[in-house]
Length: 396
Image (cartoon, rainbow, N blue to C red; front, side, top):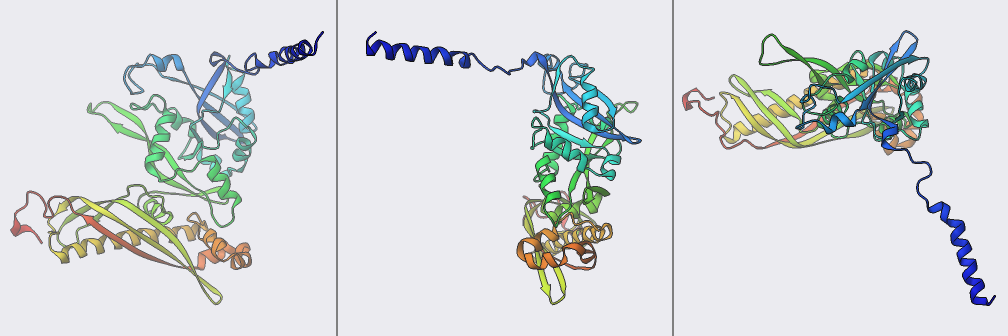
C-alpha cells in the first residue's frame, strides 16, 4: 500500500470513528414526552407544603380562536397539585400523576402563598437554585392568601393565568423581581426583599347577576430578611414604589390647589436615589426624587393657565409625592425592614461605616433621620389648561 493510500485509509477510519457522534442529540426529549410548566404556586398546609403546577395544554392553545383565554369554553392549562414535607418533594409526587416529564425551563412565574412567605422563603430559593432546569428570570410574587387559587383564575385576555400575571407584573413595576434578583438581595447586605403581591378580585360584568373573578396586582409584600412582615396598599404602596424608583408611569391624583375637585397627573419620567449623610455619630438619609409629568385630567374648577397656577400645581404634586414617601419610610421603620435599600447605599459609599453598624443596622435604621427632597415638574397640561366645558366665571 502506497503512502497516499495509507493516508486515505487513516482519514476514512477517523471519520468512521466520529460518525456515531454526528447522529443527533442523544439525550433529546420529544415535545410529546414533556409537560411544560408555566407557573408554580407553593402554599403551607400545617407543617406540609402544597406545590401546584400550571401545565400548558398545547393542543387546546392551538385550537383557540382570537387572543383571549376564555374564547373556547375549555381551559388551556392543567393544574397538578400534591402535598409533601418539602416543596420539591411535592413536585416529585405530582409527577407520579402525569404521563409526561415535568419541564420547568419555560416557567413564567413562581407564586408564594402568604403563610409560606411569613414562615420564610429561603427554602424555596434553595430548591430553585439547585435545579439547573429552573430559569433565573422567573418572576417571583407573593399571593395574599393562597397561591394556588390565584394561579387558577382564568384570564379573558391571555391564554393562561401565568402569562396574565407576568404581564401585570411588567406593568406594575419598572423592574419586576426575578429569582436572581431575590437571591442577590438576600445575599447582599443592606437590603430586604420587596415583592409584588397578587390577589383575587371580583370583577362585575354588564350583567348585574353575573360577577367574574380577576387577578389583581396592586400591593407590595415587604420582608425582613426572608420573612414577610407586611403588605402595603394604597398610599403606602405608592410611597414604596416612589422611594425605590420602581414606579412605572406612576399615576397621581392630587386635590386642586384651589377650589374643588382633583387633578390627575402621570409621570412619564421618574427617578429616585439615596444619599447617606454622616454627621459624627449619627447618620441621616436623603431621598432625592426628580422627574416630570403630564396633567391628563382636570376634574376641578382650577384654572392652570396663569404662571402662578402652574407653580401651585407643581407644589401640590411635590407635596403629595413627599408625603407618600415619608409615610412609607415611617412604616418601614416600624417593621424594621430596609426594603428600599438604605443600608446598601451606605455599604456602597462608605464600606467602613457599614462594617461598623451592620450588626445593629435595623436599630440604627429605626432611629435614622430621613429627609425627602422632591424636584418634580409638570411639563404638559394638555390642549386646554382651563377645565373643559366650564365657564370662566366659575374658575378659581
